[in-house]
Length: 468
Image (tube, rainbow, N blue to C red; front, side, top):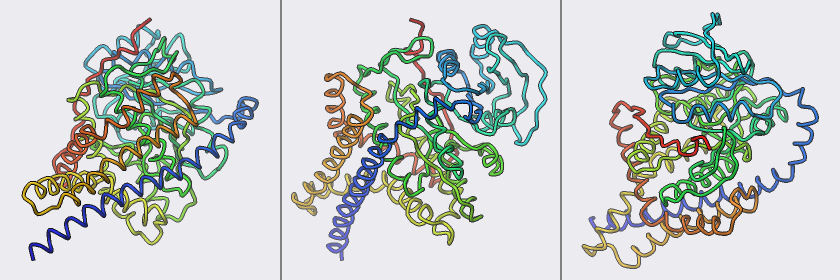
């Protein structure tokens, strides 16, 4: 009996590792063709520039809590966007640092009376401000209620039918809004779209404008660049053609405001409010039988700061995994729903089995094979095969993601930068990825044990945001 159990576990871990690797490779293959087709449609940009007066107006929402190091650069990057009609609403979510005084000083804010329709319940608003220098810049000052609550306050005050959520430690490239609006112009069924998020660490930024994309000196930050390439270049693109995209980055996403308000806005008390909203939109629209599209656009780029130390990175990854668990648990009705379509019958189970439970199986597999090898109940051949699959497929997926990046968008142009990323794509599979899985496992256990999730304080360096 014991021999059967040991043999069964060996084949289970081998089969699971092979299955997740092949699934990711399939998504990579889909992404490769999707990017190639997308790059062939770039002539549409000329149309957008010629008929820019037909662009629907957008409200850009920027929730901010204790972001004095980066908020000025973020706002300045938004002020220089190449878009015909948009407003910027910064929501100061009860910051205890210099965030609000800095905004008042740098952008000439004047307190104004404001009345608006309160469609979503939020923490009390303390005041409204309008820039005397930039007419499209507004600031809401409110009591602290968390990111979701801040975004809901911004939605209440937003003037326009489309809104874009932006993190307060990020900057947008000038044509980002013009590109991310494209799915809405192409297909009236589109309710949400997201753009690519890249890491700004190591890049040169002046007055909110990216002058040059560069690589950070720390290997830890370079590993995260590879992770972001994997997450966006196949994790997002691969699901888009079959309308099964369940994750849009809260750092840069565009939504139809009426659909989000109809769905109840952002859910407070969660740490993954961005993903939860997308999964909830899928669930509600599928259950009603509505035709809709949620899509990803690979080239509108948002640059954001990545954690530069292990402590901050650990908090971030545990929080992300908790957010994934919350999003799936709160919308469990989508799983195998009669009207769930591919998102309910393919994408949702994939997210549960491979994304949420993946760290649990991966760490258990490493422990089982290692102990089994030492004690002799796992052969060298089985152990070698397991580690070859776990590490080898990881290296292959990372390198293919880097290849897609280089043949399509080519953000990093210098040979030494490409070589540096190639080395990082290999090295991250020897220790770093396993460490991330361990932290994600802590998030899984926290979700299963129903411990209350908290955002925690994210340490910002803001080196890229300092004046030149």
